[in-house]
Amino acid sequence: MNGNYYQNPTFPTNQNTIPTPSSPPGNISSQSMMPIEQSYIENILRLNKGKRVNAYVSYPDSNEWRDKVYSGIIEEAGRDHLIISDPVNGNWYLIRMIYLDYVEFMERINYSHDYSEKTF
Figure 1 (cartoon, helix red, strand yellow):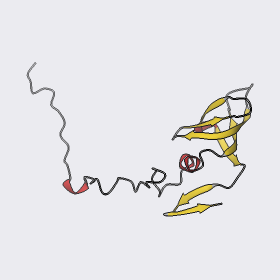
Figure 2 (figure 1 turned 180 degrees about the horizontal axis):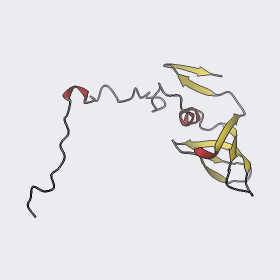
Figure 3 (figure 1 turned 90 degrees about the vertical axis):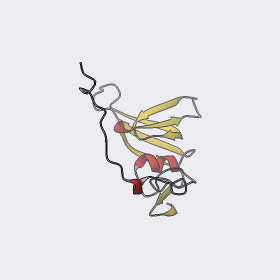
Figure 4 (figure 1 turned 120 degrees about the vertical axis):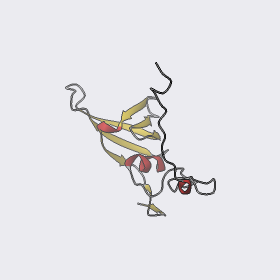
């Protein structure tokens, strides 16, 4: 085959959109290291790491575990998961966000939105 059959794609670049070290992309807050203009559930859960919660979860395809409540402390939260540790029994739970119905907090919620810190 000739060397011109498969060519590397070229994409136009705009020199004005390259981020500089002084302006982090996505308006990242240095305190929480997350985009502060987004109030997605995983961001709210991240702001409340270390707090005691009840996570209500539904597994629609399971007859054995249709609805379940996980109690514990928020350890981590990602775009598609929540990690809770239960200090009573020592168990750790990795919960997929797709199954999470809602979260009940046992104390005040930290919530950051519209460039201001709020507590409910």
